[in-house]
Length: 256
Image (tube, rainbow, N blue to C red; front, side):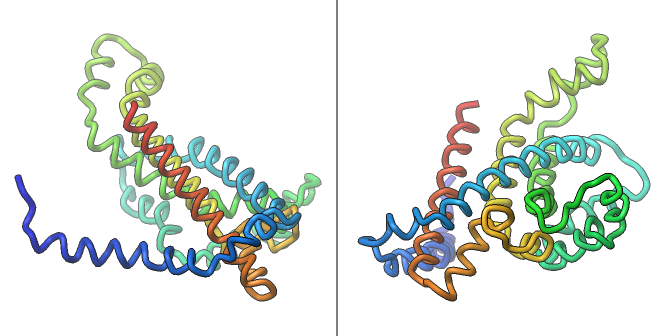
């Protein structure tokens, strides 16, 4: 079945709207100085920190997000719609607001801060704070993606397994998860990409200390004031890394 010809016009405009700013950025890159700009000590530290914290926050998203998505997709209870709205709230919440909320929860004088400090731990303005901030903003992406896959896949295979005597844990591990593995992979890569680009919650909750909390987006923001060429070069690195992650995951998902 063919598509209406007019559909291609807004589709092309939308594609140009997304691609044109990236092309404009490419025209500003000083290619002769590019290697030096992206391999400075501060740039390498920011990139490595971003990759480490994004990987850690993605693991947390999977650990907590998979059960959340399963509960939302496979159960019905009073207040479920309210709970879903709250879980998805970071999708629309300004990241700075998320950072303030985390600060008033895990900060020294926050809701849990004093208890955590008694245990000898300090979360705010540490690398752990970066991971928590990234997890806070990225978790809904995994939940939304996986919940959609669970609802689309239905429950008929799970019901058959249950009627054959499989316990709920066995059904979950050997039937449910394999069926939604592509959705889980898609959600995980979205969460990783979102964590990689996180800025507002991180600078509010974790600050900007080189090698400790200064991720690549924060480094780009700081370089923009003092060295615009370095900021453009690092922005290109961030775009390339995010593109590679999405491309590799899409190929893996297709192969599943």
